[in-house]
Length: 305
Image (cartoon, rainbow, N blue to C red; front, top):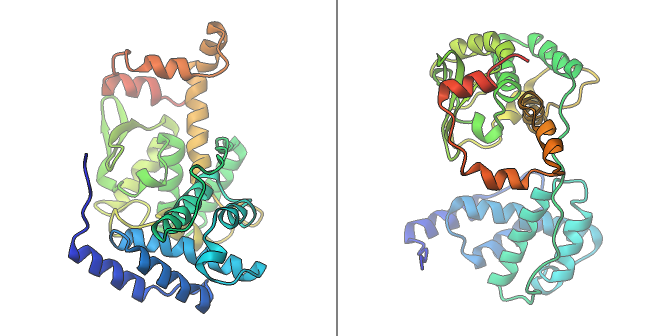
């Protein structure tokens, strides 16, 4: 069995991250209590420390708002954690609620607070709704209204999401050099934990090519390192205009691409013909199907309709 042993340098870096952490959106009382609690847990490095600090400070501020004193016994118990996730995060994605609860339960267990063996399950949310053609055109029109650098970053985001199905995690690695003409079409070379080559739908190729040439060796959606967080947020926050348009959602861009590819590949017809209501059996069989070559993938997924 593999056991991770934290080095002394990681401990020092984690403690420095805790001591220097000072969020502007949290109260001084919540910040101080969160620092103390997370320091007691001894997280494995600065990233883990920051994740626990964010969860604990939000939890403490919520507790203060509803009249719960910031103490271990009052806050870090099963009932209060569950109530916080169910009420304070009612409108958040299920993944965010699961992460917050997991972090708070981790802190509670590390401090030997009583917890139930297993928490009640949090249902997974459905997929983000695809954009309509008119909405897609509206976002491209908004991008064309921006100054050049912002325009190219926003157009790149739209083309990578709508034309290649990339999400925010994928986009953080893409420079202009990762957009390449080969195998009979335009492809995006995706790096990171989900490395792959993805063909770009024909109608987005010209615009993405312009954005790639503009970016060169730089990241297409901004920033200077692949480790940067929330890569799409700065681009969207600086966009001006678009009165009446909702904030652009990268998950909806990806859903739009997925829905289009499902329609093009005839998956709905296959499910109907096979008498299936969901695709789990297809996923089970996918491992036995030979992988497509890059040129075959471009022919299958790189078309315009």
